[in-house]
Image: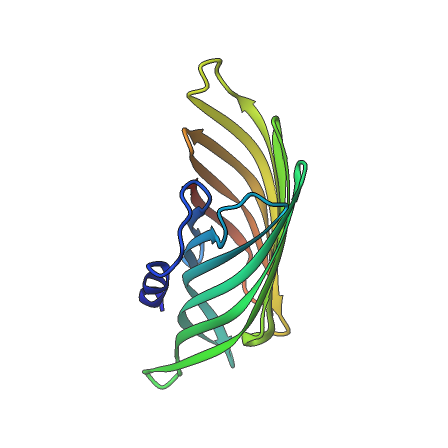
Length: 228
């Protein structure tokens, strides 16, 4: 599925200086992980309050689950090509996108082997973003028909350092995330720090993670973002 994402990326109609690339990795103290790569580019070079775009998002994750007291391991990869629309008014931006989600999944079957399956389902996502010279706030919510899974996060950052030469900028902030379905629920919250060097943004984060099905613990991760 990740390979499919790179094929799709090669077909996108890039507009210089108008797209975004974002990637990251997160792991918790139970060695459950999530890694992703996304790219978003507009479908028009004309500046407008309403801007259509195309996005491709690819990710992989590893996790554990319990069946009749037995802990089993699972992994999944998924790719989500989507069409979206961004509306900008002053310091505010609103984003909506939708598309299919393709998933490849493997999990222990309790008999010494692993079961494999491929699925496809609908995906929708909404975002709102507020930008100020001294900081920003970003809220995002997504839902996939695969396992009827939802994911949402709100994140705020404030500027803490920007030299007069403008070579870099540093931000501190906090975020809170919730996710789950009828069988699983988790909440994560903690501090973050971001360093902007030129047009590259490097972010590290960590904190406390509560899960309704497993013992709670800690998580940590990093993110990289840059416009092109």
